[in-house]
Image 1 (cartoon, rainbow over the protein chains, first blue to last red):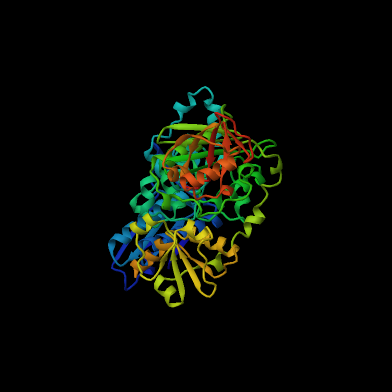
Image 2 (image 1 turned 90 degrees about the horizontal axis):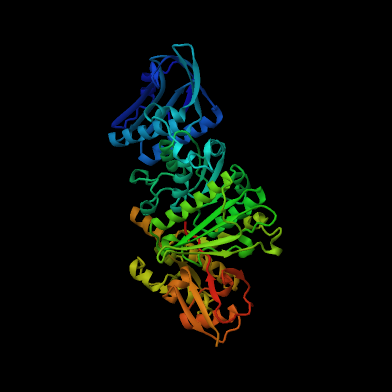
Length: 502
Length: 80
């Protein structure tokens, strides 16, 4: 039995334990949540649990499956009671069987924490004095320990006040990308009390993210960022709702996702997503706050869907190809740079939600954190931009990536007859040499300047560190009628990780 | 010859090895100026990937440059 279920009858813990029996398991850990007789200093007589069952089941099963996968447990199961319960009754049971005790404890802890934080379950407390009240369970665990989240210092700002705080609580913001920018944006908005945060990110936490993404810890490595960020923020501020969506923003889902918020914040690390956020925001009639960083610098822009507001395409009518300019992995990045830009984004979001003065409008802000300079460039609406933004359909068929990218090891590629070209810059090649001899090294710029002609009788495989530049180069070479080029998907990073794992 | 103040960001700053400089140039437009700078600094980004701003406002590549103008070439950046 692996999964998550609700029951209206008493939970039989012994039977559940038996159901997880597994000859390969050497450890078993269980957690039991009981109905206690007090909460927040009041005597509790009994409880009622209610759930949004369809969504809760889906989310619960995802949480259990993710915990099994992440910790390498053998089997895990969680049962939650619904309906009326008396003091002392078993309300929730989690059991994990695994080869060793460490995985069992860790997976069990993760499951109960996430069920509490992320699954839509409510409890109604009936107090001894006859009073009763509903609480969202996301708040239960913390509410007992935390003396409440106090917004008084920001309510003291004359422009905000109690009315402004209520407006924030009623607002929803969609954050696309939970990396360096996203961590700062999410922490800023969660602290300010924005009522609902939708976190869109399909990546998992990697060790190289941690130095600039302080919402995650080493324990989160391998875990989807959306869920990890939501857990952390739920513990930080139990008064807000978190909606983690571990999905990639695509032309098919972009308009729907963006419309879930009053404002959308682009914290992604690639042009395809930035243009998609821009286009979807204009289509859905939502403002978008976009930022990007490059080494010690950043850019910030606020896109307005109104009549004379400019958008990303007013300056860049054609979506920029990914791969031509470096990303964080290729160019390097230091934590405070995305943190500063992310906090600027959070501030622009709050200005939009609260109607504060000084909002960035039809401008591009350039910030340089080495010389501490900043510049506001006027970026007006392009008269010919009308309608340009509605390019989601066009983005829907961007690159025939499946036909341009191959996933093979370098050794297999050589056996399959590919000529391998390392298109990285010379300093990158020195820092991380190709794990295989017999390749050519032609930096991207040289390959694209037309001086190098590829032999039409051969098949070429382009390799860079992440697979982005090589894909961009393959697209451009194909457009130049050099049809015998492919790109190594994921680049050297993935190839070497796969190799090391073997 | 007109003196133009230049300010570099991101990839262009790296390739130029400096954040700003002042040049004397016969180039009459930002487009001609960028071609000069490709030779001088070995810029690898094609002009089509850039935007140009003169005196803190985006402008087009055929703008008539005047003595004392400040020109910023802006590469797109996507890091997050």
